[in-house]
Image (cartoon, rainbow, N blue to C red; front, side, top):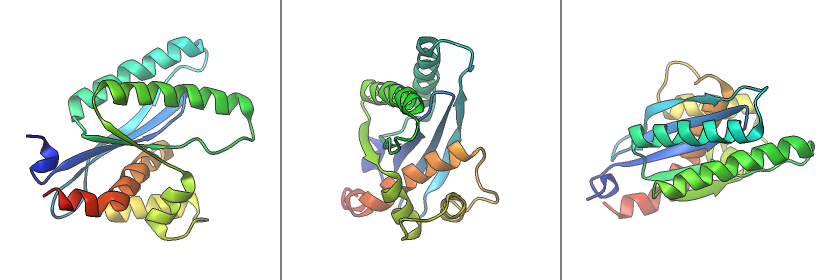
Length: 171
């Protein structure tokens, strides 16, 4: 019996990046979502991409192993101003998707617009508004730091809000 059918579901949210990858795990029960864990995976800027991606793979595998989420929500890549940055973020996303797949997680992807709309009801919300909503929804004293962690939690909360009816119907 998975936790999902025992009135609990754990969702890991991911804000992908090669230099800093944000993660946030929330647990949803019949009452209120709560923070389980959150933070960032940092990789050394001077290392080769392959080394950095391996570090992301190993760290994220360990985080998933220790927090045991059921589902993954990851922010979709949605910018094209800097092609080099887009490429490295895309590589990090690939590693994240692989780790999630290997862990047997159900994976969901959300655009920044979907995240903004889910948390604030407004598709052009500022980053600070999103972060404040993360704090309010999870009943935290302070906004999670760094920003990448708050963004990852926003992805997890978006998944919760998008699928709340589906999650509730499994109970």
